[in-house]
Image 1 (cartoon, rainbow, N blue to C red):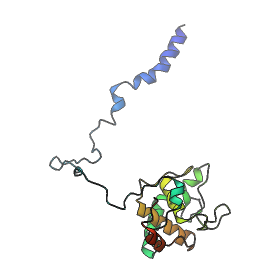
Image 2 (cartoon, one colour):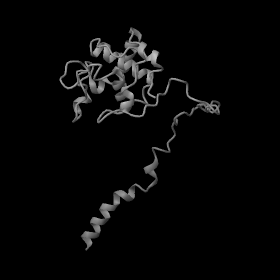
Image 3 (cartoon, rainbow, N blue to C red):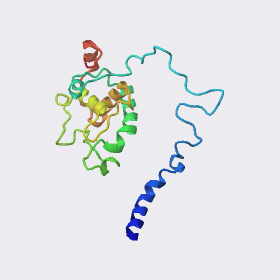
Image 4 (cartoon, rainbow, N blue to C red):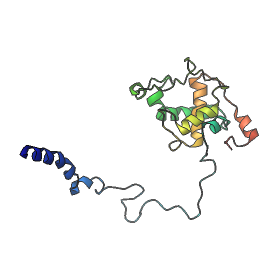
Length: 192
């Protein structure tokens, strides 16, 4: 009976230790909290004005992948867009998809389900714009997939289009997607 009591006490001891005050030290430390300032005279971030609204074009609401697939790329795939898309790709996409876009990134190697090969050099996805339009790629970046997280909170809608332009021009060697002129002639290029 004594051994059983000792076992019970030893099993409960770690859970009881969490109840002590030191278990909250990290939350209650002396540190700068988000959007706060260390300067008493300048208290930090100014509150948004009443009745403020987001700047037009910064948020695109898309219902699902089918709606995204129908979207036309509103950003011309010029050198400036491709360069910006390349910088964003290096930050957000390279860890999984690798510099070459073949799914050989350092994080991608550790995943059970390998990241997609974003180049034309694969059997599974030939990236033909008829089968995989720019809106499909933009929607996948926005909504995420089986293993891929959504980047809608990290990249603006325009930045996601820049990444699409980079994928088409550099990783897929200039495979033409839907032209931006089509998007402007039919409206904003956003799903309705």
